[in-house]
Image (cartoon, rainbow, N blue to C red; front, side):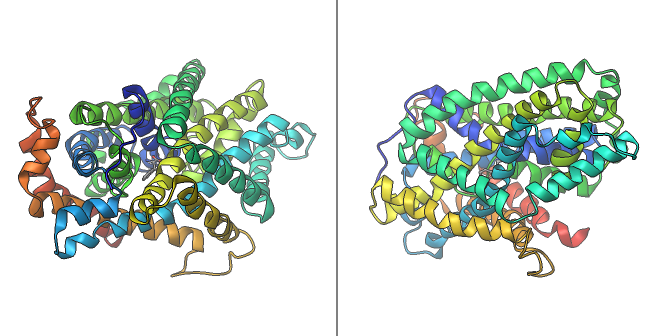
Amino acid sequence: METKETFGSKLALVAATVGSAVGLGNVWRFPAETQANGGAAFLLVYILCVFLLGIPVMLGEFSLGRGIREDAVGVYRRLSGNTPWRFAGVLPILASYIILSFYIVVAGWTLEYFFFSVTGDLYSPINAVTAMPWSTACETQFKGKMIEYILTDIKPIVFTFIVILMNLFILIKGVKKGIGKISNILLPVLFVLLLLFCCVSLSLPRAMEGLQFFLAPDFSKITPMVIVNALGQAFFSLSLGMGVLITYSSYFPKDTKLTSTAVTVSTLDLLVAMLMGVIIFPAVTSFGLMDSDLEGTTLVFITLPEVFAQMEFSEFWSALFFLLLFIAALTSTISIAEVTIKFFEDRFKMNRKKACMLVLLPLFLFSAISSLSLGSLSGIKVFGMTIFDALDFCASNIMLPVGAIIMSLFIGWHLDKNVLKEELTNHGEIKSYIYPYVAFILKWIAPILIVLVLISPLLK
Ligand code: PHE
């Protein structure tokens, strides 16, 4: 069934797609990866990955989605005849649902930290007199809060459930009135908050030192592992390989210029990641926290609260910052859920309301299991990992890259060359100089490089 619905306007289309791309990957994973991989050198490789590889793969997904205008499973079926390729769409649907079941939990944490910043609970005992030196007291406090907010049973589940309800509320309204409208509102708010934090961070005493780490490359730091990590980060951040872009582009009008849309979305996504670097590195350097472990969760839920605790109006800045993270995460969860919703709408001819319920209601159970696996179910291990980490590993490190390889091979080797050409040129109405390059990357370069990402954990 061909989709007739669209995002409503060009602005909404870009806002929604950027909203999907900009998420925890930019505001949290990117700074952590940058620190772990040598700062500016990583940034440089990352930029190359986005432009040389990310954009062509994004254009591949856009061409499939806008051309066929169905869910991911339908797209592959329509284009594959009786070959085994017709099953290729199943993987992205599964991967996206698995990712959703824990991504939404993390979105819940950001909402929780926003809430407890507003109430002051996050910072309250720190002001009490303790026998410890201030910095130790501070660290102890936020470690304790993290255990209380994230690693227990009830609190994180409550906030996760609120995020699921928000998703339901937005998604039930449909593509134009739900996703398009909310993206149009939230994305400008996100950018205003980002710029505000940039100003604050750059006005700190040792800002330049932090910027130096982030922006002055030391080429000797570039190793094969840095390249592999940058590529993995680019795929995650641009929402590639999970059917999200196939699904969203099925709502693009026929006259959308795919190339300029892909360039705009990728550039804005990169910009947000870079702004996050400009915010985080000067802040952690200025407050003497550069040597602390900036790895994911620690960075966001321990190191940054330590930074805010040293600032005046801690609660205020903290609340604004977690609001920023929450907005970024929410618009991504919406896009991931939409993949499966559209699948039910198209494959089973369900109405929107029913499809939304069928996708989001079971999440109350699945997300609770993900969340509990960090609390009282933490004893249960799958290949030595908690359920939460195992799901993350399986979906992000295996299913997502495999999905991207399949898509690249499908377009590069199986699909009639004209499909890509027709889509990139809007059926001959505009010129596309980039077409041969995209075809080449999808056929040769993308599959090989993604295989490297896939096997990279074995190389470490
Ligand atoms: N791109 C999102 C982020 O950066 C995550 C995501 C991955 C969203 C895949 C949709 C699909 O956080």
